[in-house]
Image (cartoon, rainbow, N blue to C red; front, side, top):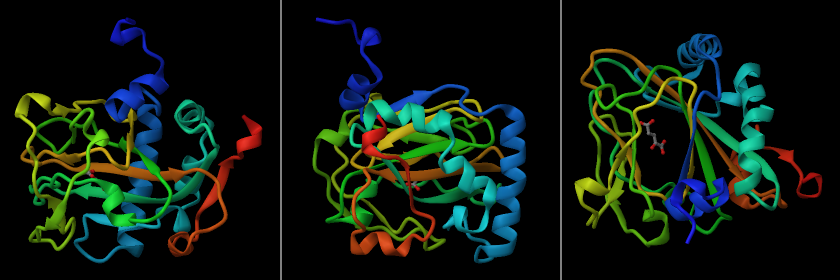
Length: 232
Ligand SMILES: O=C(O)CCC(=O)C(=O)O
């Protein structure tokens, strides 16, 4: 049997439900994108929001990021039928937003649509102390039930009901800004609390295979094919 570290990215993604891509963006690019994220939040988000969707619609920089060849190249091995960008969102944890993102699976939010994955890129170094992403490897192979949870902010209002994994199963993704995590929409994930008293900005971009629009897709005006199936 192959050693786990010799597995291809596609085989690791299949086994774990996620892939870590170190140093995808430089520190300078993260600074620029963080400034742009602040502008987008100031000009377009509900005051105090920690989640803002449709970033590429109002930001040429984030629109370009969605089809950045470095991202598309890393998606190729795990998206054999081509790559279509659907939408993106900023998730901002301000120093006073200490709550952890509850355990959830993204496919709950887009039931009865084709499979998707997301690319999570922190624009600040992300650690257990400032609210980094947490994942349960292999959890994408199981079915999970979500129930109403109700965070004080009204965001992330659903959570996994029967989270019967052990603490040892959880990977806390302590990563440098600009590192990307590609994860399946069936993977159980969340985040740690932000107790560091510092900002934590992240951009999450969601992709699926190119196909004629489903009704759900029409809600996302920045959607675009970034790698047609025949271009592979
Ligand atoms: O950035 C985070 O805190 C996690 C966000 C998340 O899990 C999501 O938007 O699906």
